[in-house]
Image (cartoon, rainbow, N blue to C red; front, side, top):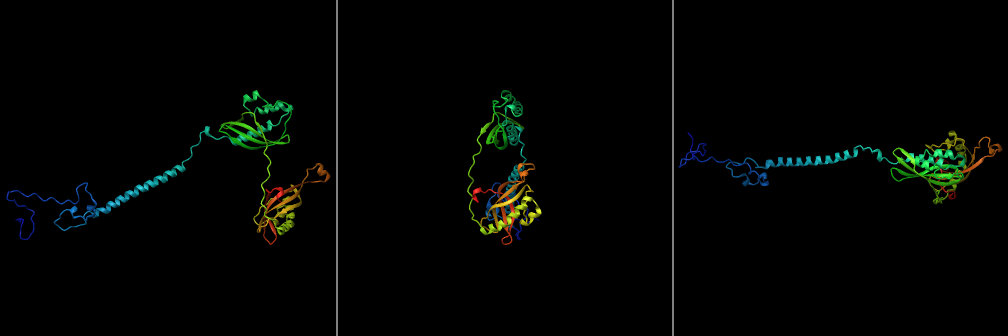
Length: 355
């Protein structure tokens, strides 16, 4: 039979006896394992508050809610790391996508002015425009029609010329172009006309790949001759100058002939110099400027050449030869105590009076 609530051995029975009123006492509510919903506090999580755990009749079997703190922290840090990682990768990949995205091809209407075509077109126009005489007037009018709009060619077939006098073009080059917008530009030609240097501004209009001379050109002044900038004086090495004066005549003889075997002994290791192939014949060295410095120098040499005369010319028949004085800039290196070798040779930027 079941024991009463106050048995001798102190054990409690799971059977309740009726009280004096004949009622059965209500069963004891189990203690909550944590706070009520919405009351998740640090104290409860830490397990340091006995009030949070509530009273207990048995021995405490754990650290309260402390076991739940570390999993929650792990979840929180994991979430933050995922958000940070996704944010950074989104920024990086978005930048890469933007930089590697192919450029959208421009619409044909947005293409730039056809500079190369306009320059060539204006140069050909200049060769016709800057040559005229009453004898070739009809031919000139016909050739100009290829460069002008039909309305201008019909109204002014000579493009401003009154049909009197003559003009002769000796030479012409494109000096530059000024682009105003996608449809308009001015090409500048540098020309030698009737023995005088001048510039001609040619207005050119473009529509897609097509161009036309849109009106009368303008005669412009030739570039003004200036005094070249002063050259720094680096002194003169008289010893090296004397050494080079002994070696350079033989070098220029080989250089004029273009004989690679003859040039070889004068060249520094690795140097590549091509001679003139017999176009000129060496006459003499007029001057040598050798600045002071180390084993490698940049020198200036003035050479007098004999020009090969054309067969049948007056000079050839008389046995005479034209002579030209020319100035070279050379890079030379001293490899054997006063024995100089040529590394490079080219045109000089030195002013004539600077040597």
